[in-house]
Amino acid sequence: MNKKGPIIVIEDDEDDQEILMEIFKKLGYENKIVYFLDSNKALEYINRTDVRPFLILSDINLPKMDGFELRNKIFTNEQLQTKCIPYLFFTTGANKKAVTDAYAMSVQGFFIKPSSMQRLENTIKKIIEYWQECIAPSQYE
Image 1 (spheres, rainbow, N blue to C red):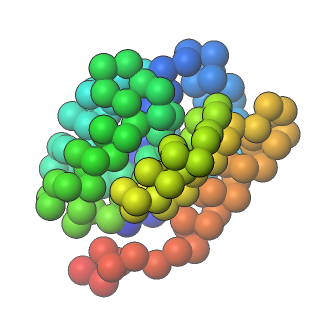
Image 2: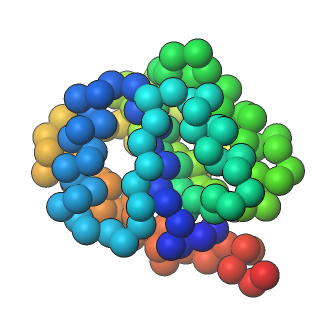
């Protein structure tokens, strides 16, 4: 895990993306925040050898390739596994099957987007600060 690497946000709702941009700007993390509307473009970016992301916040309902498909492609790719990128779902709704399926794919978190700006900001802050404190095998390379 590269704690100084970019935070990847995969969100196809442009309004939600703008809200997240505002929150990340307010929180002032040093990480570059890279936004994608499309999971295929996100996967291309993540696959680049010069990119070592800090973490991925992914919606589930995405065009072309949904969040589960994207997670599976990352999870089954040996090169990407060694990057130790925490993958978290950040979505508007959930059900038991979605949560169970997510954790079966070794997703490191499943979050419902809070409806208020303050709660959303608090959730983002908790997520980032947790992963900043966490230790991963890649830190011992």
